[in-house]
Length: 479
Ligand SMILES: Cc1ncc(COP(=O)(O)O)c(C=O)c1O
Image (tube, rainbow, N blue to C red):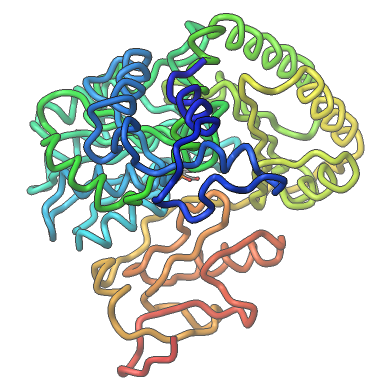
């Protein structure tokens, strides 16, 4: 069992009296979460300091680092968000330019905002069959780097929220020809590379900075994540500085022990656990072949679209050919079958599987989907709109920072055509913006947001009165 966890437990049972934080003083006997409080300490003697690790925390980081094989690995206790903010801030100067995929997570945009970056976009193409954003190709990246001056770094997301994996190795090779670093938001891929049956990780593909949310796909507590750094394009001291700016100065020891325990499980039983997951997964996909109207995303669909791979663990069930919206299917699965999925978009739902899922978990969803597939009515004419990316590139009127920091006002969505967004609008989850501050509302964006509302999806950035935040016309400010 993990050295940190054991040491915390032992300390909790000792007679050392705490004249220090946290305020609960490990004196919560009989309270809910008593065990948790007993190991919740601060940076006391013998327990190291995450922001200057040279003891037990450094040992934990090194142990985890050996499993992934990067040059150095840092614990993140504020999620991948903190890793992305730090990585981007580290490689781009204030006002510098970054090239990012348009369907990246909000945290990448927030990093760009904080650094007042100029943003260049890579627009992933939409899958013909699923209308879901794919990844990016090395050729797209090469063309942009060839024609645009001053790009300081490239940020890609792989796997995407829906599990699409780009050819990270080729992208890294291309970008390194320009002597600039690649940041891979691999928040959804902390489990990659632990078995031959799974795609390789961006760390093995040579990416300079890779961010993993442990809590998303491995048995680790919420908020736990890792940042890996490799190569000589990234200034490590600068990276450490940003990590200590964006992360709490009081990192949670239970969270760090949770990360260590997660890798105890993996080190001990990696082969068995990943093989079992793969076996259950294959069996489920085999049975779901029987679906007549639901479309199940598979590896071959993704490869046909020119992408490298598809994540084992992301089940995308498309309702595109049925009369149901994604939200309707999600609601039926929730209320009738008591199956809580990860998210609903307008034309699909997403379920996530990890090494901790039981056979029952696979079987219940498979059974429900097959049953519902027999009930779902086929749509005669198939039209669906994607939740993350539009087909055309939206026009941009000003920088993200300018739009976010300037005067703003609420504008009715129906009257927003031609207006500049001053805030993000996105479905949550996944937190991928439909419109980014500085972009101009057009008919396509407006109609997509209206569709989201019609389908009762969870939208951030749109209020109950169907208003969105735009830059102020004529200097009025109401937001
Ligand atoms: C692609 C992607 N990147 C980054 C994040 C942020 O991760 P965290 O919640 O660990 O901060 C998310 C969260 O959903 C995400 O989907």
